[in-house]
Amino acid sequence: MRANCWMGKNKVQVRNVPDPKILNSRDAIIRITSTTICGSDLHLFNGFIPTMKKGDIMGHEFMGEVVETGPGVTNLRPGDRIVVPFPIACGACNACQHGQFSVCENSNPNAGLAEKIMGHSPAGIFGYSHMLGGFPGGQAEYARVPFADVGPIKIPDDLPDEKVLFLSDVFPTGWMGAEMCEITPGDVIAVWGAGPVGQFAIASAFLMGAERVIAIDRFSYRLRKAERAGAETLNYEDVDVLDALRDMTAGRGPDACIDAVGIEAHHPAPMMYGYDRAKQMARVETDRPFALREAVMACRNGGVVSVIGVYAGMVDKFPMGSFMNRSLTMRGAQCHVQRYLRPLLDRIRAGDIDPSFVISHRMRLDDTPRGYDMFKHKEDECLKVVLTP
Image (tube, rainbow, N blue to C red):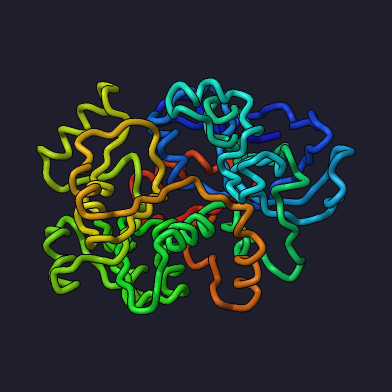
């Protein structure tokens, strides 16, 4: 089959690779009908996630048609259309039983690698390094889905791929980011990052009853998209974000702040950006936490900071004094996608939201390397690329 493979920093290549096979009784093999390039994939592309190996198949946002199942999979049959959650979860461990699927205790065969960096291991993730399981990803013609009796959700034939594809990651991730804010009517929510996850966090915050949502980014086309959803916007290259948020909230600050940026945040001040960038390049700091620092400093006293942007390891100069002394709450997670599949599918069917609004480009699988370059460099107002094998 054809698959997009990581070939080193800033290099991917679509290659011929062996077809996946059933390895466990709870596996399924699917023929992928739609997949995407996610912002999180850029962290791999840019070389910031350790334990990638040349030839690894990338991609964690995908859906398709079941072609084969192991004997332990009784809920799916060949021909079923399914969306596959990006975290792999067994459904039986303590974490899964509590709905915390992205920290499943049984799905990462390389848990020891993750424990060295994180203390404990999260779940295995498709196409996202050997530290997180080494599972081949979904930017391919076919994929093996472990624990297929737990994760995937069947999709009715009347819903096209583009309306449901993002249930695999960015829609539930944005939803959970807003949910962790504990929004009540009248709340003001600030969202750092107006990429696909940020766009879904904005839409979700409004659906949950936020009165105002303020989107913070530097790309005008992404800010325009947020404005069309009803958000107020700040271009952080044009204003001091902390001062602007104080002015917009009568000095109080947003009730909750969502970091939808993560590891590769940008900052307009050359010296500040250069400091974290240099430490990151020297591998003495893994992440550039500009958005996270601002979110903490901006949030009102007693508010919530929700972190859904991906972080890989250690950050420097975290404003712990602000966080502790001002009674803030911070929540973060890789999304527990399985928890949200059914309720969000129901919202799509009810017409509350059409997730396809984030799609800017459609490409064939063989064009994936071009898609990565376009997405990385924000060419042609690239917001979200959907790939068709």
